[in-house]
Length: 238
Image (cartoon, rainbow, N blue to C red):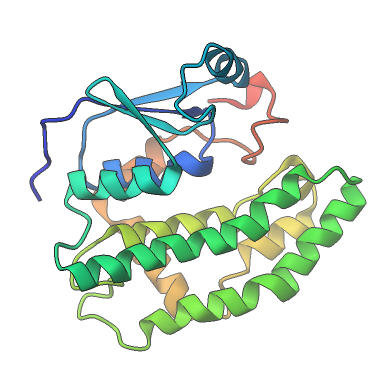
């Protein structure tokens, strides 16, 4: 895999995984050099107020001095730079459709952490998500393996951004999303166990995690007790 070295890249985002983590995984898998510009909520607000983000939000990818927004557009560009986007148009369509489908799951899961409700009500929302909302979606992803490729990848016989998007999705589903879920052993366990009925999806997660560059990234990336940047105290950033 040859990495395009014509680009000077800076990825700017909060000091959590969130919407930047897929791009970080792509860069790690492709050994793409970039600056991982992790900034505080205060710094994000300051830069936003100063008009330094093209759409007033993060993540932002700066390429040779020019800024670009939208997390999935950024991840797909990163995949092309890293050689992780299929060259065949139909294979690329398959990969991109899988990437975008992971956001259908994320859009139902992540907003729970920001709901202006009591902790008890939020835990009820998590119970409903893991027991009712999520399983049909995971069944759809499990069916992607009905016609397995030779090496177990989702599109073709090599790693693509589709594999990393599904891996990233499984990662945030099986980790606490916020401080309320993290404080509840029952609801933390709901996340940890959510792949148990989907053995091929779980096996794919294990396979991707064992790839040397991904394993190295997982071992070295900053660790947090959950992914809610709003409530993480300074002491939780490592």
